[in-house]
Image 1 (tube, one colour):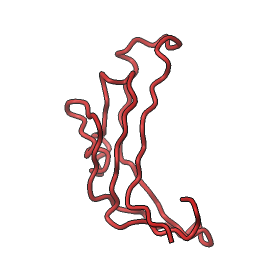
Image 2 (tube, rainbow, N blue to C red; image 1 turned 90 degrees about the vertical axis):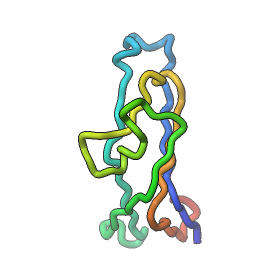
Image 3 (cartoon, one colour; image 1 turned 30 degrees about the horizontal axis):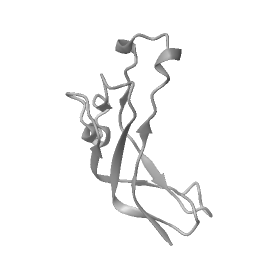
Length: 104
């Protein structure tokens, strides 16, 4: 059985040469990330998973990655002004997801 103790989303910047948007408009905030786990045989019986900690390679001032799991819809994780660079975060689950399949 495979065990998944965390999830890891990342941002992939658009090609700067192809973008007509000024840097100041390339801003996004990740808020209230949520994960639901369910058995493949009972996909409608999913249980929400809780997070214990979050970490990231970069966080915007005032927009720490921990804000993405604080249950406050007015806060979140930001990466401005480094929006033209790839970034990643790791959200560790309070309890790992167990999956008998080869993928999750």
